[in-house]
Length: 172
Image 1 (cartoon, rainbow, N blue to C red):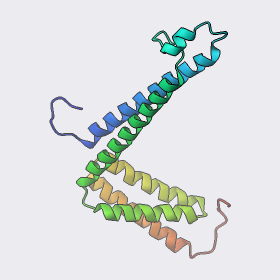
Image 2: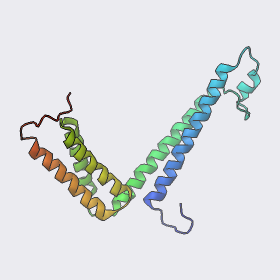
Image 3: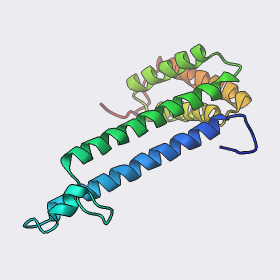
Image 4: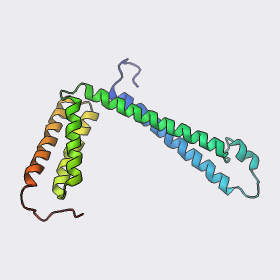
């Protein structure tokens, strides 16, 4: 977060969430390394190091591993919560009400689930990604235009779905 500005931007919150996720990934890797070391120990040669979970890269006890896995989950949950907060802040300045965003996104999800033509899926997904990118970038004007583009794609699919199939289906 920027030290020069007291305002917290969605990007600042997202950066913190990214950092927490990266920490959770590093923690997971460290736990797994320690567990693998437990399996590599032969004939109790390093039992004391394994029990202590020493800093030299020894093994880890089951209880310690479980406690660290719980902390990993907590880090990931906090990161996910921050991602939600960042999205909420990013959409706060939009000229489009959040309910409309959710309605159109749900409509897109249902259309993608039922759609059979690859070209239609590509257009709808591209429009959905454009909307998500504009929101993530806190670009209110771009988000409004992207929302309209997504609506246009959904409406075009609805109109095209009434026409005979052109042979470019994805199959079931």
